Amino acid sequence: MSTETSIAKTRAAHLCEIGLAHLQAWEVEEAIEALKGAIALDDTQADYYLHLAQAYIRVGDYESMRQALGNFMFLEPDQDLAERFQAIFSSGLDLVEQTLTTVMPEHHVPLLVVGAALQMWVDFQVACGRHPLPISDTRTDAAKWAAALDYTIRKVNIHDAGLEEIALWYATKPSIIAENHRRLVNTLDIMPCDYRYFRGPQNPLDKLVEAAIVLETLEERFARIE
Image 1 (tube, rainbow, N blue to C red):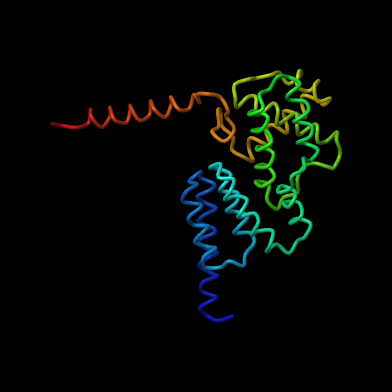
Image 2: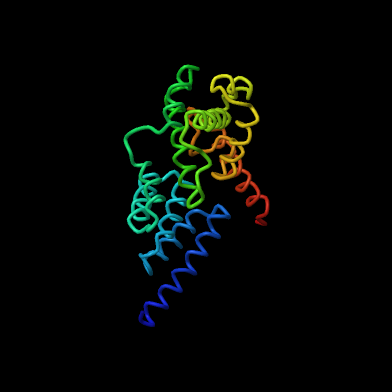
């Protein structure tokens, strides 16, 4: 390895660390720029693309996420891991998705909200990265995660349903739904009315943003001495 290449790799690793720090702080645009900079210096590291895919899901840029994930799979030497992500590109539904698309419509959930739950499941798999997915290949385990996704997406869209009720629909326990719900929220940093998954006609967060802008304008006007 030449000195120039070694320096580039070192700089790339540093930029990746910066990108991850920005991502942790929810400074997503800065994270994306840093990670793209790392890839420009060293495009041989699979993890750089994986982290970039994880950054893109924060802003709902799923086309860019899929491109980054495709590059990750091309470079990743662990074939089992690469195949796990390859399933995201499949046209077929996995057991969790099959359960969601069966149960949610039965309980009058709009198709847009069902689609948001499916997207949340994809995002969760990407956000887990190299960590093993906390699910076995059984319908019973799939139902547990489908129930948590259903519960979570309802809360995001202000269509709350009780844990006991949802547990009955999916033949699981409320405590398991609550545990998996916390895992989803913490892994994806889900907030109330999260823009990535809210499918209502008017997101209440818009009013908060508008109010913040008005307040900032009023404060600047109040502070001016004319």
